[in-house]
Image (cartoon, rainbow, N blue to C red; front, side, top):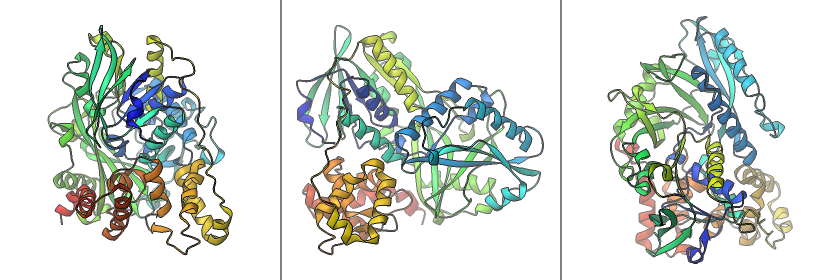
Length: 558
């Protein structure tokens, strides 16, 4: 995957996609695979904003039972299966539990019945999945089992627990990147740190875009037949005065990560303490659910909270006070957690489209329930321009399918321009001597790379072989606690468009997915990157400070 801005000139693309969150990334792959010539532009790094700030659960739509919305359930079920098929090494089954109370709506019997109905709707959930990745049907647990899984759970009226199975992305940031890379293998031109400044039109139709390479400052015209705006909370920037996006409000969606194992083996849904009114639900639960998700053995991810947001997307960041409020809510609903700010090691925050709000109470925020594709040509805007108002990470494959259908209504792809898969040629490297030299360490490295890169793990391993570090008794690991190989860093630099330390820490590796890496680890990485990218001492220090700044709300509380 090579960034080549100069190659964009003189080419007319069928589709330019603006924004490489999960919606833009999946669409780039599906459009290229369908035969459209595609250019994908991202003004920062791939998947850097809301798509990098999720609870990582790939939902199958079981929550839509309370709305009797079987259409959305099917969209979620099919999309979840699509993601599990695409990246089985990254998207794995996740057992989920909800404690049950009494014998009414929240009772064990009613919940078990509901999950049985869901299993019928999700009859084909495992179609095409490897056996190890197949999702089990719902079941129930006893009260004693529930108390073991959730120590300190409220026991008054507890009758047991209802269990269902969803999926979790072990690395949601790399999942986005894998879609981008696969799109490139199908011929898509992809570029990060490239801003789309404005549309170009001719006779009321899209004719191109003006882009700026943020690494050089150079501007270029890129010709295209259509534009899909997948810029998340920046949708309005490109859409201008589009009626469909006028007055769009946004909500802060936030999770925290704590260095405590609060639950065992299950993602657990617990009710918050504040009332929550879902105006679209036929069956009212009355409280917003918080999920406690086991993460990397030592941690628990907890969320999600929602609050109205009133600023610009460019100025968004979570504050210490907002994180402290989340802690207070968690400790109120689940006193056994006994969390303090010292337990919080990381947090996620992003902006989602908001339907309505009742005052400023977080639990009254109504997020848009479904993603929407807007055809601006039908709203008095330029023909050939679409915008994706994305709501759910999971349903990106369904939205991509809808967009492809709309593109087919505009024009057909030019035969032979795209849609041909370009396999990565094996590097002319003999793995044998390195494998022999590694001995038992080889199996550890191979398994680790397979978990992160799936069938493409050999591409990374070839960098380890070419470095000669094993034969020269060199170091293999930059970090072992949060694993990162020297070979991976070289791979990121040469083949994954890495230009900042934050790209490595937050989106190419799991190094910063749970807590701030040690300064000595960051220094090792930045020195290697500095040699490759020509950074002086001042720039190397700036790159480290940029990463530390992400964790500053936690440091400010100390």
